[in-house]
Length: 306
Image 1 (cartoon, rainbow, N blue to C red):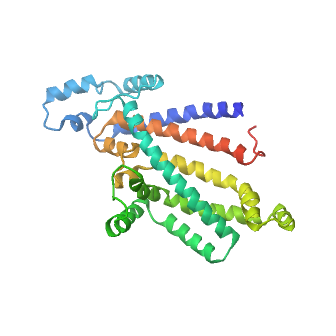
Image 2 (image 1 turned 135 degrees about the horizontal axis):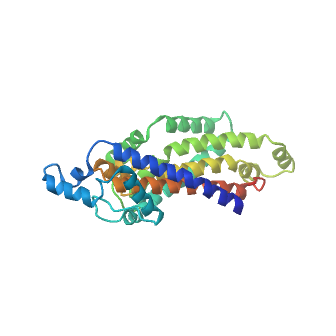
Image 3 (image 1 turned 60 degrees about the horizontal axis):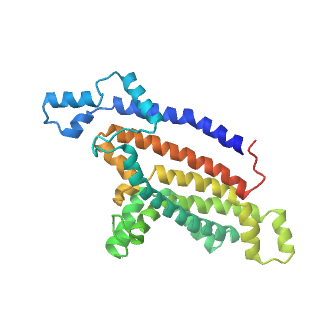
């Protein structure tokens, strides 16, 4: 296990370094001037030149990249052009809100998706199966922004059951979490259904039934446990996607997480904030994938890490 973790960490280093290079080059060759975004196009030439010199934007590209890598290695992601704060402080302030949203979306996806998948797998072709497959097709087909706007129109504007946007208690969390987790609910339902169908047709399930065990005991204790491996895989990847891909959801619902922070940084050409956020989110995704791999052993001791 230890060798596996060390090997994955070593493999993650060149991956993250590649992300750093790509993000750096793409942002610095993109059109627009971050200084003009900071102080406006009407600023005089001397002020613009002085600020560019202070930010080292006139240095050669390799020199800028070298300085940035040196800072990243020491844990310094730079300072935001817009907020004038260290990027790490901005991320520390906003990432817990994204974690809250992602955790709620994952909880919804797990409860609703797995429940639909289990009911569907127990009664293939039945009413529950058709309902679960319909939810799955709708969830996969509809884009995130469309789902978010539809939920706002239905539950916030028409029924007035929840606020349309903002950050606060549970009432503010339900709609964005459901929006973010809708596609995962669909995938979880289909994945669990397929895994349950395979598990329920296995010989050990027939043996358990022959012993006279209750059908729900057979389904939940024996079949579901052995169907968890593909479900855990999807859960882990989806949770990483929640953390790194919540930009649309946070923008639609004005959720003050790291996704909205990235959108604001892009619109205002805040290069350090974009670079720091991309690198941080890439690291989070790698860590989540590692945790997902380790979770296999808990669900199935037969999984090998050799």
